[in-house]
Image (cartoon, rainbow, N blue to C red; front, top):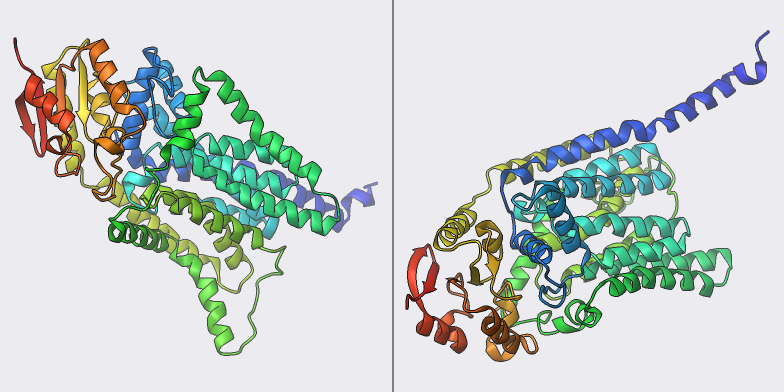
Length: 505
């Protein structure tokens, strides 16, 4: 005789629903993995996409050769990503960035899964699936040089979304740790602390519990990884200087503000075009309200989205820090934007189909753009690197006077100085004007350190002037002009790049 308690229609439906929910992730994660790979396949088509990749690759080689981070190997970024590059080079060799590109796809996948988890908890299974899918479609919605490269923002996003997810679940210690990991990948990732604290405040008000214990957990979780990293580093004071206190002049508004404003508006417009479909529910609601009609909803709101707006605001502030507005900075905006868009569609009468169709079409355009993206600069850089390799031996050192450190990595030659770009010695930064650019504006004691390096290691065999028309051209920097005039002769010109070699005695 059948057990009516387990064979009733309600019991069968509950069991079926349980099986469906149990299989949710086993079906969704493979789909997201395929989509993450498909949207980032173009990343494998080029040896290097951006100067950041070239900088990290060169740093990793210097560290492998015995360099000391924040001493003989310097940058204005936290240490986690340089260490990751170094580890990948140790395992797979340093001639290709394909392992980092594969890990970048994994980082995008992790971000998509975490966003799916947040959206699923707020608006249901369908919203969760679409949050993961939409993030991966929108994740390439900028210039290919900004979205296909394995750089800081890509590896920062999983920890950033994880911090928000932990805060949602009131796991304050874990949220603090995640914020720290995010900050140790890139400083601006620490902006996610604002929505974490906001959720803590709202939770304590709602539940009527004291906030100091939870705040202490967040603070301890945030401080612990940073303290461990500082303990691992042999130069913790250098870590503090290069990551926190030594970038004041770099992160100020220069005189070239029209170009900065144009870059900010341009990248915002590109990102808007990628996620334009998310404006549909908002436009629909505004249209109905203007006509004084009730706003239909697909389902009830499941909690406030104020925390998502706080997250978006904090990310916008982080993007604006330093007034550079490079495209890859805008990756930090994508997670809260995707969640707000998914939430708007999930709670409105706007159907999912047109949103999916537009997002897929936009993603296809950006993916095709990445495949056919012009490569004149990379071609020139590769030609220069080939010429430098031909002019030197692996034991020789090279000095690149410019903002493209990938030349060192492509040529497979050791840098003559710890300063891999001219920016450290002149205070120049990409996209800013000529104001406060010159020897007198260098990083503290940089020229003395540079002179000591040259004295200890000898003059570099080859000097590459990659400054073009920038305000730090050799004739505008007396020390560099004197160095070239006294010791070097021109041996090649490629585009606007001039290659010098030590004069024969």
